[in-house]
Image 1: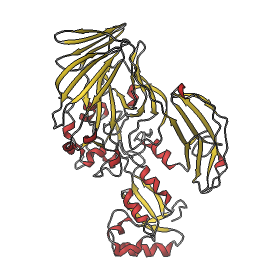
Image 2: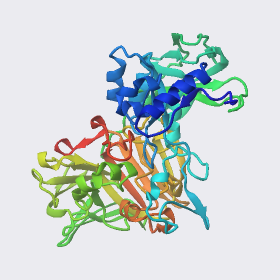
Image 3: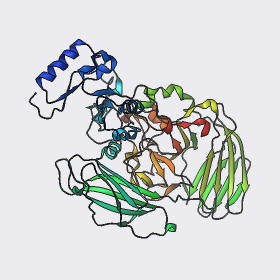
Image 4: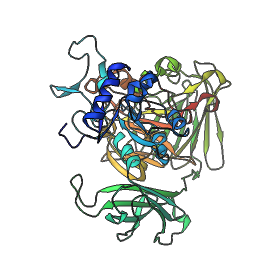
Length: 544
């Protein structure tokens, strides 16, 4: 009772409600009238509603919270636990932070802060690894911070949405809201940056905007003139601390926003390559490259540039991802199991080619081992420089429901262990977890793309990718968007390897695995024991 950091007294946790809690509430009100008390259990038994001065619920969907907030509530609402951060999670947190527009919404507490993995012989272990039975296995891995205290990609998303400075860049202007309770926005300095195709071409001197707590304002920003034809233009604004604080140093970025004048790359063939049509293969060659398509398999079986072979295995369609903890909890392993091997066992129906003026088209059609309306087709347009424009088309079918992902898998030499890309970064991102990721050029080691969740699962996806390069000291490959941005991951392991592993130390690296996706469903995060990914972040196989 002598700890001044206590803000709210809790009567207990997950224990229903009854007369004992009513008596405790009476005691707390008398013993400490300066603080409010809460108890989540009364939401299950409204007879004891007077035991709490706060409407506090666990893992309530955002829509249900909004229903409460719009009905002239008598009590403020706090999500005493929400956004269960287990594994690759915290999807659509924005649906909750958007509720701050209601005066009675007082935010919530993400469960949890740190994974509870235990280290043994250099590895992080979890329930069941110590022959403990019964056990909840990796259910202790629900932190925004990993057990070794390194930060997870989820934390960047939380930082962006929890920031007390709300920034929006639109038509070159800054819309700023100061949600601090006591601090003027002049305590921060702001930088404006202009990027062209991801490269920084301009940065302003520090700017100051003075808004009192709770105030909003619009500010005209100093931007240089840029010709549209120079490439994709991105206007970015960042807010930074002016001085050292106990929790961060001067210059720390507290908020960021951007506006992109999008100009995505498009493929224009540069001339026709030489075509060799044999009994079993189709060959395409030009200056410094050789590409070989198998007529029996329907896939490229060899892609060589400057004599180096880049394909280590046949490419495959992919409709699957290694299940996340939320996927398992939502039952997607059962509901979507038909997609796991649909691409692996696709059956070739036809392969043909067409000679065009400045390129050669190789066309293939496949049937999948699930009911479809028509074939899945893929077309390769190859030009004289060895560029390959790939177009995959999946018509979908009503009976196929949700789709985890759609794209292609490539097994490349593991020596291609470094990457550089232009897209959202620097961390992994997903359709429902884009906040905290910003357009730019990022680079690093492929092995670092595999996020070390306590139990291996889908990881490493980069969203809105314009181009992605993989290379070693000698040479490399580039995957480029063609009129629409990509989701792309480059990892030391395949989705099948990740799906089969219980711990990261069980995985072995034979190739650099690339998953180039048109789309992937969100990761979800309302809870990890039943809540589905929100519909707006799902893929409908009827409209793939």
